[in-house]
Image (tube, rainbow, N blue to C red):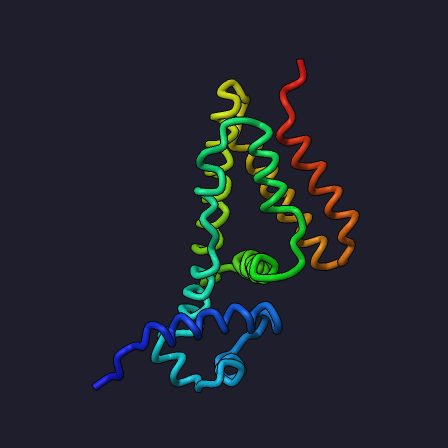
Length: 190
């Protein structure tokens, strides 16, 4: 008879998986090193998650911020600018930084054909673009193609965050992120 799942232990393992990915990366990740890092066995990880891919996706789901809530009540440019700046200017420490580092790795891995991460990555991108599109539409119902504006903003910020992780040039990337947000949220030229 299979052992019942200890849900508290499962949650601890998922948190540890995120820490492992942030520290060691997603490339060529295998169960044995993750299990050793977590103080368990690869057999136990299979018991809790079934496959390595299922474990990784479950861990990622625990890190997904509620982007819909971040923009749900935004109906003016200043609030949107403040929310974007707070959420997406560089936070180099803590859980937000860990989540961003892991998300960037997953987005890269999702580009590989038949990637098990593609559905997760697709959903994450669509959620933030949709939420931002809705906020931009509330702010200016006459805005021409708010979805492309949201896509440009989200993709630009993602690229800037990746630039920062690669170069470590905090001052330059932070200035560029603020400039992108200011430009994207500026009122239309008259």
